[in-house]
Figure 1 (cartoon, helix red, strand yellow):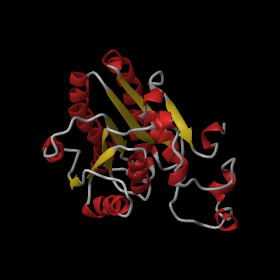
Figure 2 (cartoon, one colour; figure 1 turned 90 degrees about the horizontal axis):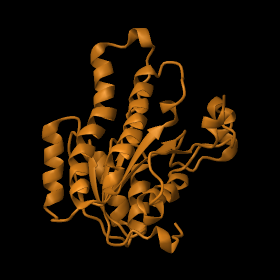
Figure 3 (tube, one colour; figure 1 turned 180 degrees about the horizontal axis):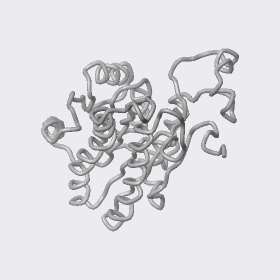
Amino acid sequence: MPLLPEYDLSGKVAILATTGGDQAPHLALALSEAGALVFTIARRQSHLTAVLQALEGSSFANRGGVVADLATTQGTSLAMEAFDHHDSPVDILVNDVQSMFAKPFDEITLEEWDEVQSRNLKSTFLLTQAVGRRMVDKQYGRIVNLVSGLAERGMINTSAFSASQAGLLSLTRSLAVEWGRHNIRVNALGTGWTTAEDIPLEVQQEELLVRYTPLHRKGHPRDIAPLLVYLCSESCDYTTGQAVYVDGGLNAHP
């Protein structure tokens, strides 16, 4: 990815939390290419392996990672203890936690509802609180929460997931106000329908949602990466509390 000098992250240390998906390795690689050292916290070993393999296959350094359940205080403490083995401050936190769940509202059990909110919202709360305290002490930080466009839009059978994403967006805006005085910028990076597969355009356009998207294609993680780097950089100094969407225009629909 071509890098402007003002987006340089050299000397910065980033924590990337992910619940999986094919965009996490691309996000980690973008941060590394910009110069940041990346420590990954993943919910499963396969998710962590995918990120570490992407970084190991490049010429950019990383700080390894750990598998932890961030929806628990014990898991969050375990993750931060693993990070502390490197004896580094943290400058950047990227929360890529979007565990999708779809089911008619009247069929959702309380256990399923709690699980969705726990994976997507509670985990972000616990990790952001742990990392944010350090940023407050340091009087510096960049926090980016990846959210689905369903944080602001309705879609059939997605009420539990959409509620978790709306919660993430509201948390983003509230923390931007609360922590602005500590030189911490908190923003949301909104995504649409993305895939890391290189699918021919004519094949993509056979799908209804792709035809509904104004740009008539699925997004790729490389579409998201430049904005992520900007939101983590010094160029983001006067941007906070914002939700910026890279979704092919989906959020522009009525």
